[in-house]
Image 1 (cartoon, rainbow, N blue to C red):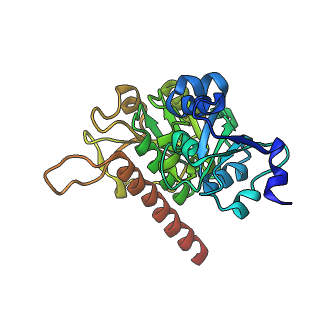
Image 2: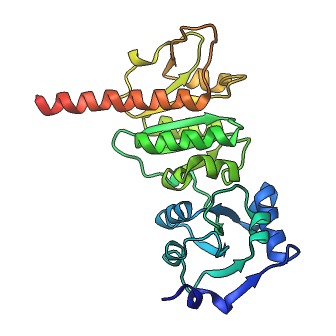
Image 3: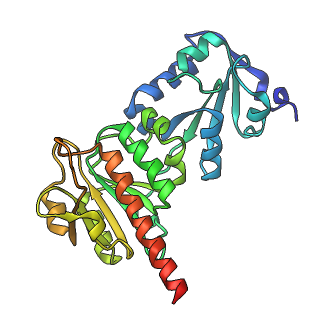
Length: 279
């Protein structure tokens, strides 16, 4: 089917004052607008494909023919998706970032809860308490995807899960890794009920992370770089772990720390699997 025939009504937008243009800009800039409408914005063909693969519903697509690979775009379109052709000037107005292949879409939000999680036999989870920087959260989601983690849980969140910076920095991992927001108390109860060990990353009263067993069900708990974890998590922990700091500074970026700890769990589990297969 030709691209033009997939565009409902062959809608074209060239005015910066168009109502849909204003709505898109509001969705990009305001978390309150995203919550109110129950939709968020995704840019780029690759990210949109991740959306579809994860079962998200695309409501509308805006594309600029001068910037778009129409062949790739055509594979995303269906008769149920409202599509709009926009001028380069309009695209520049609505695009949150450059190099997004001339495609922007509105997508229906999903609100996952702890009860929606399907855990593996030996779950591996990252839990973040009050992490506020969308870029850090996006990077952690990428590491969680690479490590095959069951989910990322954000407790008492200070950032919108559908923040454009988060979506961009996750490179699609926001769609491939279950991401859940909840309170710390609810998360602790969930972990205890599922016999998942709680390992808090902290400097005080801790042991080196590679001396801690991560082959069983494991939740790695991390706080903000400035204040760390609150007492509610320190008291709930089964073990306190730390990454050795051999220089003059006492901490790493939270996304770097998360990647190190996640792949330690991967390393330990690979060794355990290898030893089991030899016995």
